[in-house]
Figure 1 (cartoon, rainbow, N blue to C red):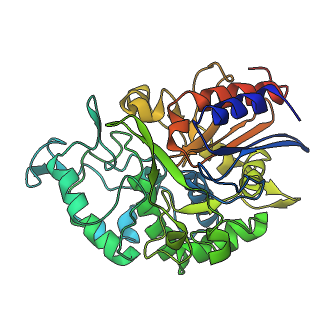
Figure 2: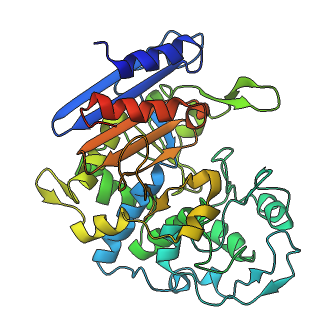
Figure 3: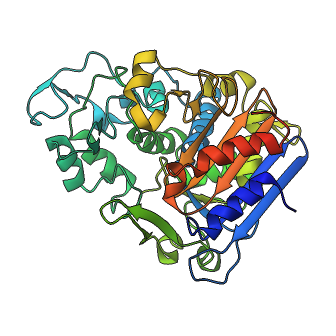
Length: 392
């Protein structure tokens, strides 16, 4: 069925920007799915509604829900110091300057809390400068040398959670806890904390508390070999050459459990699985008549917790949005909707948002990272609102 959204996706596929895309919009029981193109350039396997995708940082809101569930069970407290469960982080000092030597530090003014991990204000993360992300500062070289893999999810870190957190704890923080929004690392730390709070592995926790109740049977940190073989090829433009190139993240990577299940970006999922998750949030924490997480917890997760200065410091990563728990939250009206829209994207080329005012869910899944910066995502978001009759 033709529509402006489908036509726009097809045009971009036709121009060679993507080999294929799966897009979904939903308002109430009205769900529209567009499957366009194939799973790799030059291939003949069509994109399907149930094609699995590496959703990368769309893992973060799933982690937030699991955290709030454990908080409601009194397994943890959002305001407690993380050292209660992560003693490896006790005594971390703070760099005097982000670009300074590792030994030039000051004491932390307060402990890191669980809430700091959720809001990504723990004082450690990707460093954004006018020249790009993660310049060769001593702290960046140090975390790279330790094999922590704090930016792109591939190649994966070889360390298990206990060794990973031990190595992370050997580094100073970049900023004081609560001072600045810094992307990615807080949710990786959170994954280790949740497993310890719950007494089982992160994959087991997410499967029992989130995936099984929501019927997300195709979501996890790895897939059976036959499903992993269905993952589309990943692509991203090499800015040195200007050409779209393959990212090495093949089925063999995704058919075995990873040493470190990454809460910041390690899940694979499908359009309908993520729809179930998004719909539960839009319904205030209820799925199929069963409450999975409280309405106040969902409200806290999907409300902005950052100051204007912290939003500005997020630069191109936040793009003027605020941040709740594991998800971005718009604080001003834009070309897509009024304030209050929330969601997040994944670096492999996936994105999702809920617009509570319109009752709208929108999901777009590709495996081409350029989706996030070539104008396609903005076009998708606007047309998704129009298709669903939400204005925009």
